[in-house]
Length: 268
Image 1 (cartoon, rainbow, N blue to C red):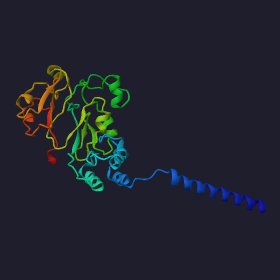
Image 2 (image 1 turned 90 degrees about the vertical axis):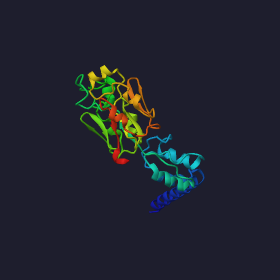
Image 3 (image 1 turned 135 degrees about the vertical axis):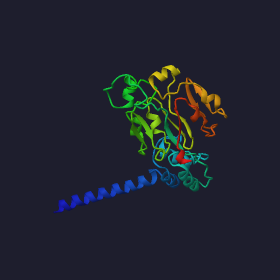
Image 4 (image 1 turned 180 degrees about the vertical axis):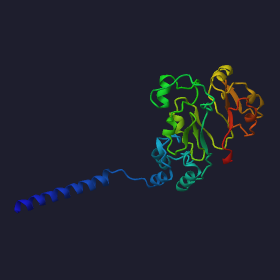
């Protein structure tokens, strides 16, 4: 009996000593919690997309709490709501956050883009791109295996008729889809930008037409007729400068192949 009591007492003593050591270690060596940083972190959506320029939401929250001058409106997924909450915590003015949305610069679905061969490898865009560029005749277009869909945390992307489509009502403009697209046909643009070029082909018009009936042929009608000079044809493909664009939609009406689309009119 005495041996049992001795063992129990020894264990209790060891436990007490360890508890004291841990308490002292936490007090003198533990990482102090920054309450302001914790409050800011609660305002962020947790997308960890890096579009703010920091290493995810934790990195952005730390920078806001510790570094003077860091703007509170850099979180695209959080938008204006997150900006106003963060600004309130920091005691600064909440700046405007322009809503952004991802757009697929490719309209070459199964009905428009020809098929050069059948693919039987890994069902990923990255795998197909590495091997031979995908099944489509146009090597600049959407491959359609859904790497972007897998990367989206907001269920805003679906694959229909061979290409990716983005639901602007769900998209928060984090850019995760653009990061993983091996063909680089996805970009993040202003959500209220009406015209958008659904093509990324840089071949000459005659070559493009043989491969995809919906591709930009570089005719330059949009560039020549844009009243504010917001459209330029670069490497045989039209590009829109949204800082200049007035959303007049003239380019949409002029495009002979219909590759300039009206985007998000229901969100205006």
